[in-house]
Each structure stands twice: as structure tokens, then as C-alpha cells.
Length: 89
Image: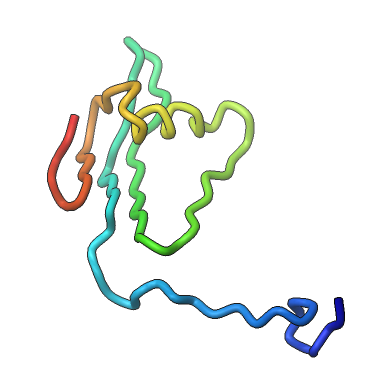
């Protein structure tokens, strides 16, 4: 591939996601506790259609717990979880 000066080796990348609009998945102050162990606390996340969202962190940071909440495997114990604007559990 050749580099056309864009830093993308010939590819031209364009953000096609809408500038405005409602997120399809949203967490507001979400958290998860297992007894007196707090795995997550105060997580805010918005996922928009047409955009790539990454969950990144150190070992033990709560990434797997967050994904399990979003996928419905675990229930959050604090905060709000919305899908298409509707609260879910």
C-alpha cells in the first residue's frame, strides 16, 4: 500500500456516525457489587449505532463485569441501564 500523506496508507477514513442522536445502549452511574466487594462503581457509557466502542483497562479493572452487565448475564446493582432509551434490568 502507498501512503498518501493521510497517515492511513492510502485509505481515507470518514466518520459516518450521526453527529446527533440517541445512544442504543447507555449506562448512567452503573455499578455492580458482589456482597461487600464493589466490582464497578459510577460507570457512564454511551454506545451509538455506526460507531466502534472499546472497553479497555488493566487486569481487575471490571471489563468483564461491564460486558456481562451489557450482555444481560449479570444485573447491575446501582445506576441506570438503558437500551434504546428504555430502562432494563
